Image (cartoon, rainbow, N blue to C red; front, side):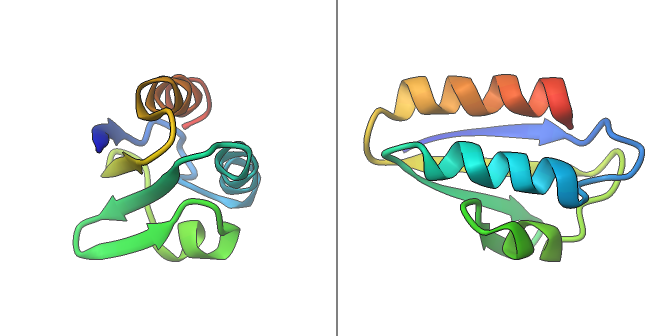
Length: 85
């Protein structure tokens, strides 16, 4: 298991466009990816689940990568989060 935290920098928080792009990225991976905000947990392969977290600007989310090529997939996700959220 590999995990990392990210503080949302997008003024609109996690909205439809980046949630869709994140979901698409995760679906192409051989790892299970979970995104967590506080006590809410979502499957990062599902757009509506990601949006249901309600992550806003300056809030922290945690991404958990399990199975498959965890190191490489976590690195891709971290890069995506920095570039888009």
